[in-house]
Image (cartoon, rainbow, N blue to C red; front, side):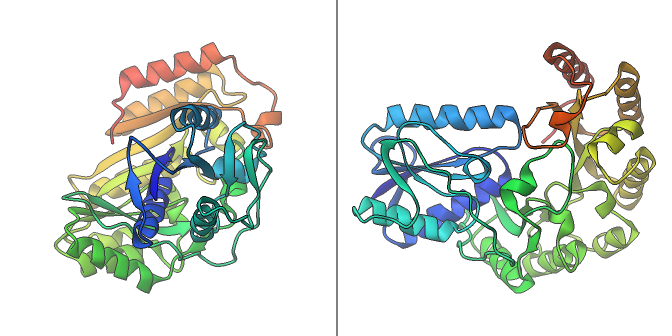
Length: 365
């Protein structure tokens, strides 16, 4: 069978889609990017309201583009809400991806799957529970040519940020066993990967130690460079630095989930650190690695953020001089603490603050 996969959202989604593609190929199927397909998988994102809209639009667009294909939807959006879009045939969430692939095969063969199946009708909510331990059932994708290899090492999130639906979509934090990570990293390096990136939903919560598993991966794949994806600022403490600064192939490229540089806004968001902590992290990284690259995520227009609060974030970022920012206007999400907060700001205010930051700082990687 020919199967197309569209991925929206983060690098963890990309890694999971690549794993599903690898599993499908191992079972004798062909993955295609265009043309005729017997089935289409859409791996959705729900990190913002805009991501929800893109996911829904993609479902409708691909239903029209592949009118005779089986349309299967999985990922964060259907994990958190009922999808009622005409034309969806099969729905899965964020857990049980290997089982989801098996049900896709069954549906293609005409068997009735255990997952709800609707033929060109309303899709049924399929939110299911999450496993207690890391679900290590998808193969890691083999590098194609000279490319980066994204190795998923963790899933879920234990944080309770006021603006975020990710814990609802992914469950509690679960860490992948170290031996499995090392094996995957070695295979990627041996397969020609030019860089190993350890990724996950919230890798700062990796247990027993993110720094230790990163150092172990560096030694296992040397001289291939290795680095980490997005980090909570509190993760980068003195012990973290001491563990990794001696690894010659560790890439000091840091993407920090700051979200704000104003103490009042950080507290309202439910973040666990202050601006003083952020400043210390920047100083610590730059002292340990003279050529370090530091980029960050920033949310503007959070409920109650005043002009003075935004000005504080702007001024602190100017002092910190990050190498790039990913800027997000606050996205109101039903079911989050922030959605019920007073002081919701007009779209125009959020857009203007985002524009001002974007004009002052490059996007970065």
